[in-house]
Length: 272
Ligand SMILES: [Cu+2]
Image (cartoon, rainbow, N blue to C red; front, side, top):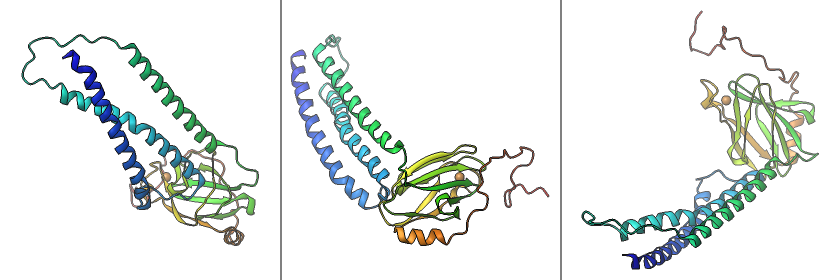
């Protein structure tokens, strides 16, 4: 039995290489097809493009690890299947210092690589905004989003209008409960927290109409808290923003709702 072990490792290793190549080829062929058919949101911002690149690299790096585990476990089950009850103990397991050291070093290299790539992506997302970024104040409330553009006489709207190829700085907060400001196609998802302002920057790179969704369960109409986002040309944006009425007093202070007087919901728990 012992003499067959080196052969078993060689056979399983060959299987691993073959399955890895097959896995990588399937992924590289399938990923663009799935993306083109709406399996993942279309890329409408640089931020989402960066996130997809990281996901792509991580998946390519993960496939050999996955096939290694599956091939060796599968091969061991197949090759060392004991038909009937064993009549004696199996051979003693001894250490293999070279194999262990190799595997530890490969693990460290893989984890280190993912760490560096991941933190580079995080740094890009969290980089300070450009000085000419267009500021959009985003205010969540049950159950809609309000926007105001402080750089344009505080123009206000419930539709989010963004110019293409220009950096946007969202300043996100909420006036009642926690919401989460999510635009899948633009790769932004940031909590809207009462009493706090969260920031996120994006640069839209694709014209079109998308949806802002709320990503934090925030009450009975949470599921309907979707509003349109439009990415338009800079000239269309400017003529639109100049036609919007200013927001007189942008909600800034957060007042805790009294627990004895819950917010009235239409048709729910009506008491008087
Ligand atoms: Cu919400």
